[in-house]
Image (cartoon, rainbow over all chains, first blue to last red; front, side, top):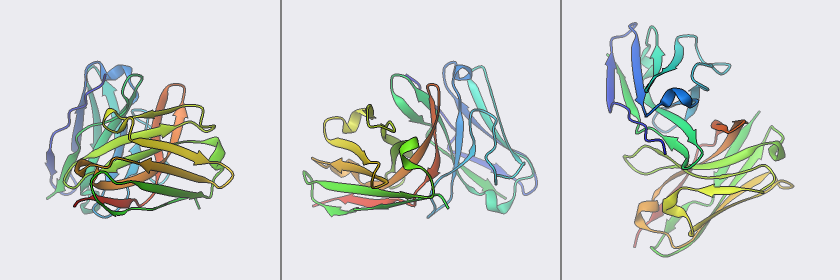
Length: 107
Length: 121
């Protein structure tokens, strides 16, 4: 089964680059998806299948997946990017698996 | 536009039952797998259940197996979650989500706004 570990919080200065990691055994063999959840709003997928960006998601969001770590990168972070971010994979044994979530603070 | 609207949440005593509904619009509902995902107060997202487009296969997280049943009515463009023997730790916002599927990989590409379930005496 897949257990996904994320840092509880990440801080980034306005306009700088934020990196949020998601760790799991051989995660590189899985497709990793990333969701943004702002208070009071439904989650939104910002990256799917490691590095694909849905239409409407700004280009500053990007993703990568290698070894035991997947990374969501937000280049030029803006105040509106403050949110909780979750990684997710689909496991053939345990089905849907989410990471614990990372709170992004833009300073 | 593509939309999912949940309903049916509320306050229920431990051991009680609730049936959540999700009305889909703006897309061909019968073409998509669907999921329920929940978020308990102060906790992260938790995948709950998943159903294929024709209802041929369903799966559940271990904590709800035997208590929750996912179903759908493609003629009514609706998804359901029957929740029985509810416990305090089922208290959460429940989201209906459309599933994008590709081989054995799935992710939730459209989400509803959620409905709140509170289990308390």
